[in-house]
Length: 186
Figure 1 (cartoon, helix red, strand yellow):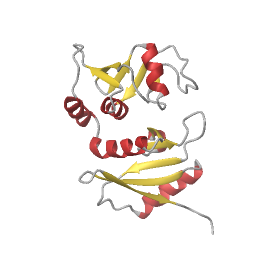
Figure 2 (cartoon, helix red, strand yellow):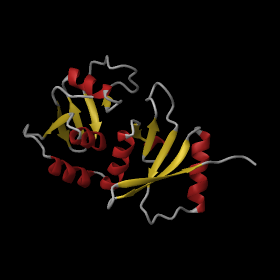
Figure 3 (cartoon, rainbow, N blue to C red):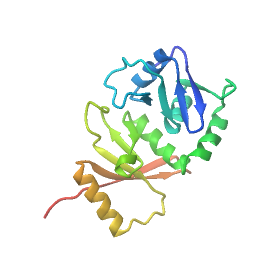
Figure 4 (cartoon, helix red, strand yellow):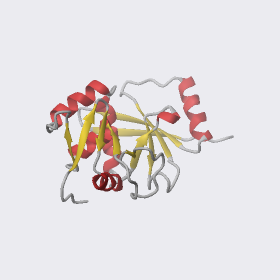
């Protein structure tokens, strides 16, 4: 989607806020980015509130040229400075961002998976249109999953009717491998 002008986002610690309502609606409409303040599950971009972005979303939108991010003095934050702020605020930012960007670039909608105990809940269409079919946890290349962790993930995923996936990012070649688990009853 072409951008006629960048939306202005304001950096506040671990979040970016788009105060202009028209810009907030436009950015949200690009693929369910952010959360309109005070609206838990918006169905359409007809909300009348600012948009709250987490750092992964803000970094992605900044990288793609959709938003400009300003600091508390209303000075533009460069991509490099934004990356440093994200790394300071977000554990394993580089790995999680590589997975987030890969999924978004594939046209998927990526939201926090915190309520499921994973990194991301991923949608094909979007929240409100479907339940997230995938739960994704980001792990390092040398991660060893224990039997208990595997059983726990399987029980959670099958209980909420989702597919559990491990995402393994490689920061050297900038590629992500996905390992999807399937459970069945004998």
